[in-house]
Amino acid sequence: SKPGDILMLENVRFAAEENLTMKPDEAKKTHLVKKLSSMADFFVNDAFGTAHRSQPTVVGLPLAMKSAAGLLMEKEVATLSKVFTGAPRPVCMVLGGTKVDDSIEVAAHVLENGIADSVIVIGVVANVFYLAAGYDIGKPSTQLIEQLKYSAEIKKAQDILAKFSDRVILPFSVAVRQNGKRAEYPIDKIPADAPVMDLGMDSLARLVSTLKKSGTVVFNGPAGVFEDPDFATGTFELLRAAAKVEFSVVGGGHTAAVIEKLGITNDFTHISTGGGACIEFLTGKKLPAVEALEESYKIFG
Image 1 (cartoon, helix red, strand yellow):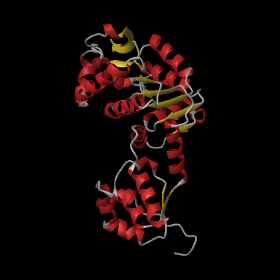
Image 2: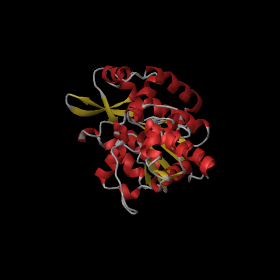
Image 3: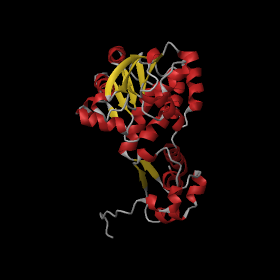
Image 4: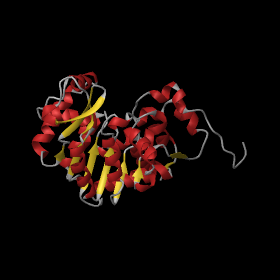
């Protein structure tokens, strides 16, 4: 190869070693890292989507060679860091979707440390909080939580409600599928045999007004089964409201796809490219990739 040539290698995930989780010192000793580091003078990590994984190329290469963060990695870390310090207040976190364990960890961190003024819970996350608050959400939704193995999260949600009940906002009505159609009920009257599919329209108005009064909104995960047009309203309208605030950040994954469908991508300050990495960052943990790059700077300058 000549200077100026670009060599594109196969996806490192096809190498068995790359799929192992290991500490940076061990990662540095792998065949994969030794081979790759011998091929170059400099390593640039621009893969924020894998920054939460402690895997050989992510944490080993920076210890083996001079390294830097790419422009995307820099933008992600800088923007998400602003959520913790210097974000326009009030700060509202919207936590939804099915990743309840991660969402509860984020809620606990941002409430205990005064990072968020309020947390809105939607989707399966809201269902766990309903159970924690003593509501009966019907058999189908309760069974889903058991299948997802989130029974232990109910206790954690109870602890959060006990300490921060004034700052955790739960939709006070839901939409269920009944006889093949959308039907709405207050949360103390959810039918025993109908699955909860979205939040109710009357509670949507209250949540939208909370978002409109916010300076910052961090949005992670949908409010319901948005793939079904009958149950997409909650997710769509909350996202439209979130797009209008001064500083709006969205965790990647499904939510980013919905925003694209709505045609409001450019209205958000930042749409993260890493679902798992973004949510781990918001729990206050330092991402392994970022830590490795800092360590690399200490070693190689």
